[in-house]
Amino acid sequence: MTKRKRIVILSVSAGMAALLAVVAIGGLVLLKHFNGNIQQYNLKESGLLGRQPVDTHPRAENILVLGSDTRNGQGSGFGTGLVTDQSDTTMIVHIPADRKWAEVMSIPRDSWVDIPACKMGNGQLSGPHQFKINEAFAIGNLYGNHTALGVACTIKTIEQDTGIYIDHFIVVNFTGFKDMVAALGGVPECNPTPIDDPLSGLHLTAGHHLLTPKQALGYVRARYTLGNGSDLERIGRQQAFMSSLIARVQAKMLDPLAIYRFLDAATQSLTIDSQLGGITGLYNLGQSLRGIPKDDSAFFTLPSVPLGDGGNVPWAQPEDDAIFKSFRDDVPASGSLFAAPGNGTSPLVAGAAAPQGATGFPGVGATPSTRSPAGPASPAVPASPTVPASSTGPASPSASASVTQITSTPGPTAATSASASRGPGRQGPSLQARTANQSICAR
Image 1 (cartoon, rainbow, N blue to C red):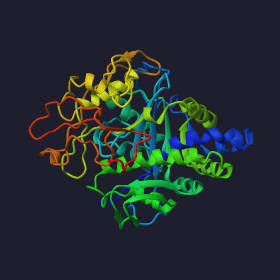
Image 2 (image 1 turned 120 degrees about the vertical axis):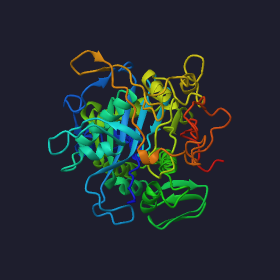
Image 3 (image 1 turned 90 degrees about the vertical axis):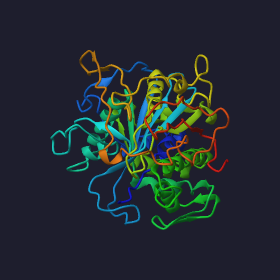
Image 4 (image 1 turned 30 degrees about the horizontal axis):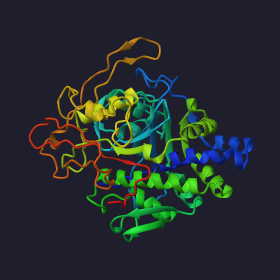
């Protein structure tokens, strides 16, 4: 299988923090320069998104973050032969209305989902079908690499399959990643075990390191020779790297040149929705997040049950429906890491008895009523994707209670979900989240 490169979205959250230094660096002139670097699209009024879920909490925000990259000119270490921009990293950042906590949910790229009809680069519509979620971005990028069409198809897919209203999107292009790391003089990293990945050329002893730009790229992309070779483990490493990158940016706030170089590289790599407000909107968003403690910022991977076929990853139900509901209801899914509203019970636990999808396993998130931009609400299609015939065997032995083995265990208060019947051999995972200040080396 061709190795798929991954852009780590780590730079986006770090960029929000870095924007706090813009005024000190140069004010309006630099703001105009950085704003000119950013690509912006207005998808809300384009008609490309179709019917969207009802936004029941308009003061809260769900931001879709995608990693986009191309293999052109990058060598063979991370895959070749792909002719469209790819998106192998998909995250939803949930920012609550009260701005007292935040969650980042990573969606595995191999998640088997329903993909609706989407506009392609040749002006035609693709047919609705079931496939891995990362194909949604590739569909829009067919016939010319059209980022806006790829994002629109991804948003349609996520909103249809989860019922989560997406307020904004941020796409980070791979091309500026190494420049961002270089601007910061490297990024600290800790790996519990040695890393020897000949495909990326990454060779690290166990322990703490200050990664060079090339090493950082290898760390966030490497997959097959590390751990059990799963995409889920790679997501865990990326989440840990994101936390480290944010801390590195914060440590460089008194170095105007480093912050300028970082912002210049980061903004040249960004594509956002115009409603976000360009560089000023990103700055304001960063300001609103300043007061959130690291203990109250959680990262987790959407629970799934690997089938052992090396590729297809159905979502775990009813756990995932409960997580989707928590995002829609503006309450933390990882509520045991920090005080949840009301009685303090995580909505993942409280919602564990929610019904499964129409086909049982793997059910896609039950969606609430949807609305057309110019019409009344109407029910969403509740159909769940069917696992391919080649993937209906027993679950892999790795389909244990741990979502990803690389994340540090939060302790005795880790959120766990009630077990659900999935048929013979199917075991449901629990939600394991990590806070922004937890080290990947903490065991």
